[in-house]
Length: 446
Figure 1: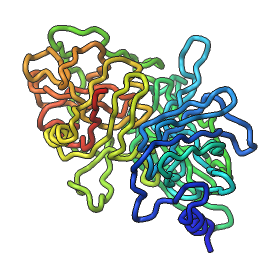
Figure 2: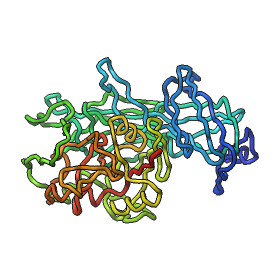
Figure 3: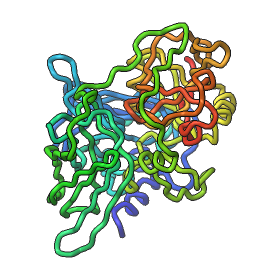
Figure 4: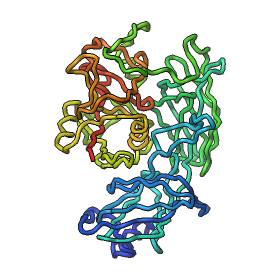
């Protein structure tokens, strides 16, 4: 018998007050309980300041200096432990010195509850361990063992050594298993950060193998030599050099964004030529088959095809401890559909009031295309939130970064959060992002 099947049997008979969730979930009822324990590495060493999530209890817990965590008011029924994106390390100037990705850099190996150990072998690699909890249970000494995920971190630079910063790239990764045991590849859109880095995570079933990484930026490309990746490998020193010097206006620093709230929307003059839609789609999107989803043939912005999903899937409410508000990522056919679904939930499209909330949303839901509740439909240039809150913070991205639009600024009344560090982009009917945005973040007050 496979060990996960065995674990199903064990949990179904109620050991330590838990039942592993089957096709009929446990029914939440009765008193709430508590769940506490420790997060450790594979050597059993406690990990301080590590963040884990318990859903749908809407709770995030950061471990203390001894690696201990506690969840309170845990409802009876199905719960799931996942790993959200951790905060990056910072240098003495407070600037991140690690690549910040919208995917967790760690994965759960096992969760031990009493004498029972649940092994996490399959998809998704970074979470997905589900179990049931009885009414009023007090579960202690849970041990969550985690490890860093295998990855290749690369920096894209021009031939004069300057990094390609905050840019959309096309990524292709090919692996050839050792001893002629097969090969495979993945490709899709990605982006460099403010220091020119990007990360590609490697799945357990791909190693040991020799990997080749190819990036393409506009018409220029760079390819790596073969890199041997074995179990547990993290290759962080790859440099991919494009055969072109950095443009005169290209700097290695993060491009500036609008930082002042103005009474009117002042567009910058367009200086670069307009590209065709097919060309933009080749750069920005791919068209994987989407079974049993609306608009399955609609091109969508995509990560490599074998990448695991972000741990916070659709329809999971999460509470931000900083303000007590609950947030959820939803699928939608359009902006109007997103607004209707939010209203049905007694919620509204998210209102982002400060940098801390913006970073929290990116950490929980990842940086992708999302509708948010900002609009200047009533008064041109006066942006307001759908829930009536005043605009106290802005996170506009560069206007020249994304595809040219045939619409005037007056016709762009709505806003999407983008996949480039969560920056915002104004759109109107007919824009590329208007058509491609198929998710939204909704929010409920206290």
